[in-house]
Length: 463
Image 1: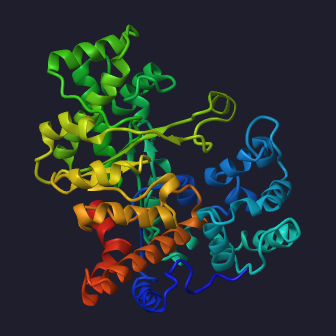
Image 2 (image 1 turned 120 degrees about the vertical axis):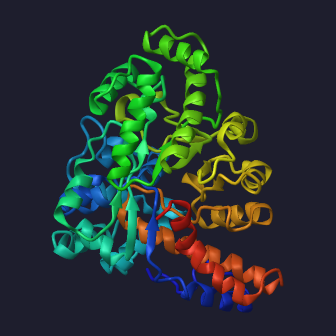
Image 3 (image 1 turned 90 degrees about the vertical axis):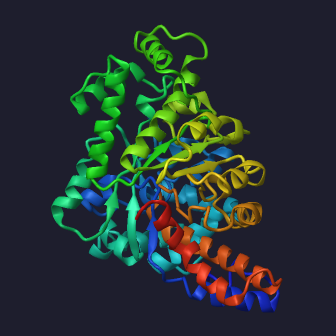
């Protein structure tokens, strides 16, 4: 296994040469990771990773979904009751099925991590499984392979975690107390106390009252609790919020109607449609709060989460069963945008799994509303082809500056530099094509490449 220097670059000689030159100018630029799902405990406790399986396999739902699609049970991957506990056996299962990842982004990411991080040059397979396992396992206890050391080795400038509104942020406090120079910031994710369909919603509201030292029995008290928690997150370094709503529907109800809606939900007397309406109203309320406190708002929509009820019940959420669904941003966002869309300083970053909305809705919306930015390709689309389709779909209407740069959105730490490398190569190839088809001057391409690598992300997330 050898990673080709010109991987992902166009085949024709002239475009490849310019792509390589553009990539070389950003290949070593610091990584800005403003949205992701790495475990805050890694950064706070900085303990060594236990084994290769817990680093590469069990937490990575890109990996587990492919294996389960071919009949590999979750238990064989170390997940669920009665799960396999021997990490070497889990790794062997992964290696024996590694051929399934041919031509997928996961293959690029894993190969990159094996070679660049652990010095593995053999292709992962059933035959090489034990040798590669041993090579990784030998390195993991070493200080230079602990999370904070990898942060520095990967040339990461900042990474954001995604944290429940109810989280005490103890590990972020630990990072600060240790005086480590790495910048790890939280992100305010209030879904558990905004979505009436979330498990334990009413209990979560009680907990919100406790952690905010407030009163969530009333509409105004509930909103005040959110403001208090947002202020706490911001004091801990947060620059953004994140909202994983099924659709981008928003609402702007009169205060009396919003209060009555909350009261029905709080009393457990919801009527059909209340949950969806409340989520819609709360997106607008969160946008109003972002006008007040300056936190950047992220909306992740277009995903039917936990498509398998059985998998969610037995193995939990985030097991790879999120499936794209069509949504309408144009109609959905209109109430919120008409309420606060022209407010100075407001930033709302839109993510979708419905690629058809890129050219039809997101680019036209972000190309006119000053608060809107288009988030990078997400979940199934943060791939070579996905990133290329994204650039082709949005650039002509929204340009580059109405996009939010790239973020890796991952739980798999060692895939972070690999994902950014793929994005930088894709963007270099896109810019090279613009130059060689005389739509962009070469000096402009070299000025834009660093923005796509990390500059736009810094700007979008106020970093």
